[in-house]
Image 1 (cartoon, helix red, strand yellow):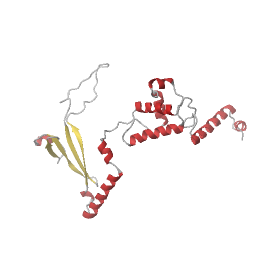
Image 2: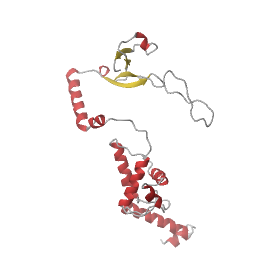
Image 3: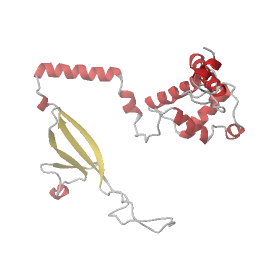
Length: 242
């Protein structure tokens, strides 16, 4: 059926229906060939979009790969990368990109909106030794040794324990307080500006039972009052380095 006949049958304007059909055809062609300047959702034209859908997907995939290998990119780094990408592909870009050698803020926000699987996250500091040690070979070796021990000694689940440690500061972060609007600096009295870290050791079994925790204090000699008010049955220890 022609567009004119279909418009007459469904009581639609031919110009409107023709425009919708053209958008749909361009979207299908762009999805198949990776060319054109329509949006990924196919609803309307992105007349000033720099990269095609396929090119943006490659950029998105690269950004996610960087995050997976513990070298995530910031907004500024992605904007600089997008500019270098556009130069390499000989894309037509705004003059503002060329002046500052990076993509604009508006492009960055639009890029994030077009790819909802990306988000700005607070990264956790990870040492290179920890990142490189967590690999397929080491993990496989661990589970191989683990299975050997289980088969040899037949440990029950309540006898299999997992231990982890974390640091607890002796000075808590001051809460948000009400102060005069426009004041440059707002202070809050605490016991010290910088506290010392006490190592907290948590132990839990594979069935979910917990062992009373242990606290390791950065002291040469341990005193019983160090754990006053702590969890019942907790263990206190001291080492010079903490």
